[in-house]
Image 1 (tube, one colour):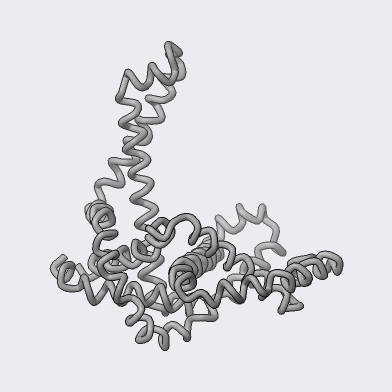
Image 2: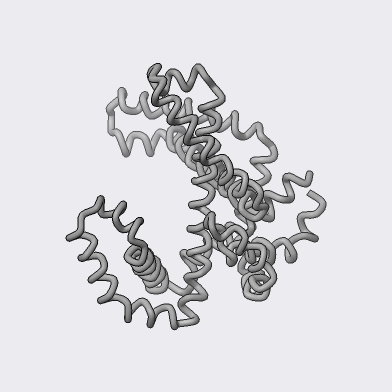
Length: 284
């Protein structure tokens, strides 16, 4: 059951990193983190002429406006980055964002490869356009080395696997709520009144939701992981105090993946939780 244990630990890492979006530091800190992220994005953009030209579609006036805005906000960004407490909280949020971007990038490239490998589907997508099909194949080939690098990062693949499962758990939760609402005649009447047609449609949607839910519930591993997800925030909070120490040991390995957006802090969180929770999940 190594796969189950691996995903459970990764789930805990996701829970800890995501917890900083809604923890006791409050909305003000989250707002400041978003501001730091935005200011940093535009500062990096202004410093890269190639990216700036692409972003502005070679509009010199717009590019000049971005540079002026960056220069104006530079003191504010420097002051915020000098705030160690703020950045300690923000770095965990940024780590999750970076890992999520890498997950999306990996999924996109994998999708391209699956498309290229399926001639029938490729022909359907391109509507028989050989030139477009060739372009997609070239794109997939060009992205292959990047996919190899991303797939070779154990921290990232654990995170992405946990993130996919998390999304499935959320989907199951939504299905459960939809089925429960349709089974509540009082709630249906309160929402739709005596409109029998709307009530019937709601019940039909619930029937489809129930079928999907039953199919997903037959996956015992998924159900177990969804149950574990509800328990990980408490464990994650207990482990958060040691995440800084783990960051130092994880940073060397994380630097190798920096080009593809794998952040050290996220790696540290998963490594820390692996150490803390290994005993508890080893028997799963």
